[in-house]
Image 1: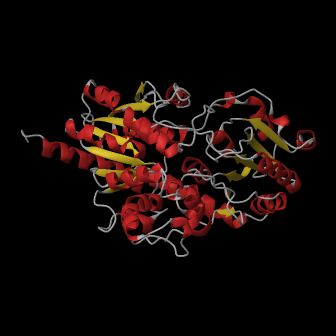
Image 2: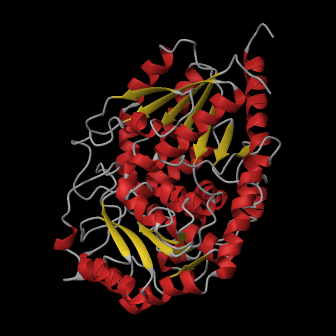
Image 3: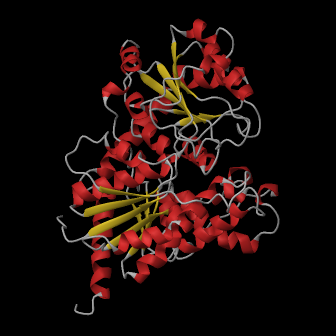
Length: 478
């Protein structure tokens, strides 16, 4: 299917977790469906330049056009206790004049507008410009169902969701247990809850919703979303879209070490670009890895005794040569484990590691990008959810897909002790044959969805066709 007369303008909020799926969707629209693609990236002082850095890992000759909008100053609109969701919402709200100007001055003029979940308030700009408008939720259908149904729950349920004893029921979907709700629903008095409610309402105002999932992975939740009880707009499952494998030159020592390890013998430990642990938890995790006697690669950040997403607005998406990890790891840990493990400060080439045949497990925060990167490489997971919708993702991995194990108590509720870490790591690495086989089945399912003729490929074709029909209906000459 060749389409050359459509220009997709895509809007992305700050943060690598949002930027990667938007970039990958843009590249797929460009290379597989022949659209002209421009990506508007709203930046913060720490995230400036991220988009171009990430594009360097793409070896293809064609690239989306990137426009980085300058950071907006929100210092007078937030306090030291303002949550991440609220900060992102305010940033995107304050950036609307720059977004409107960029869209108005594009040449050729955009014929389709795609905003990520935090940019939903910009739908009004697309309406002004008479551009078909879509939103891209780079997460699960189940999360999207909860988001879009939350305004109904808000009217039906009194008190805090987390104080309930009964699960939250969503039509056609798996119920959400109170302890699994997304971060904005933890406190109904906080501003981020009202921002989340607003997003749920605005989802229904778009011409369609794109999801970074696929039909075989979430058939039940997708069917529910497409029913009349939750969402009116059409839903397009277009995943799994993941970051490409990084060049070998990014960390030669690390990759050389991996080459020397037996197949599926290494567990990779990383909590994403924004996740942090307390000093006590880092100590227990270190002891657990050592006691497990398993080979490991651990991406370590300094401890922060605050909220688990405390590093979200800090730049940590490139190599960092500062070797300060000995200051907060147990005495002698590095010396005792140097033959079986590698500790990497701040950042590592995650896709390169997960795609390596020596890697057999992933201890992960269950961010959806990291989850897809693990699943598309057939790697089972130790689920360690920290914030956002990661608790829901952990449920999908453990209870629906059977590709993960998780801690007895949520890591945000209680420090996970060394013996439990040891047991989880051993279970995945030594006894996880069934999970590994299931993960490889999921990998093949995802590959099939993206192939020409696969469900996700056809879904993007359907999106383009529907958008063209909308444009024709808006054109008085047609």
